[in-house]
Amino acid sequence: MNLLVIDHPAICVDLRYASADNITGQPIYARAIALLHPDAHAALTRAADLAGTLGYRLTVYDAYRPPAAQWRLWEALPDPTFVADPVEGSTHSRGIAVDLTLADEHGQPLVMGTGFDAMLEQSYHGRLDLPREAQRNRTLLLGLMTAAGWVHQPHEWWHYNLPEELSYPIIDDADTVARMMDD
Image (tube, rainbow, N blue to C red):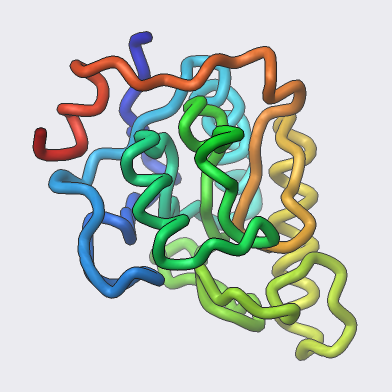
């Protein structure tokens, strides 16, 4: 599968799993390259264009995730509320999911009430116990992503994937995985 590199003027890539700034406390990816299935890439481009017309940008924290990386996340947090069971397969491993936030025109992330990968109930969509600014920003991100063809994961304000996920196969070919991880 030829995954596409995320590259758009209204998108900043801050691939958290290529650093220690993630739930495992160590880098999972050897290279900070954000890849998506062509369908997801087109939908993310639409979302970035919509955000840009409002003076916002998107910051991508994760995109395609090789199955080996999914196993590492599962080992760190085997909770299907927040991490997909790698036996069943992740939308990230299909190249059709993106973890992201909304940022201002300078790339500064907006207040969302919790950080990325905060595995807490406060990370759920539709929380009313967050500051008004965080609720507004989450709703704005949800609206932009939905208008661009994405669906949300109810437990993570930052996670979106394409609908009909099972129609996309898991991508685990050696060339694609080598673009991100050491063999």
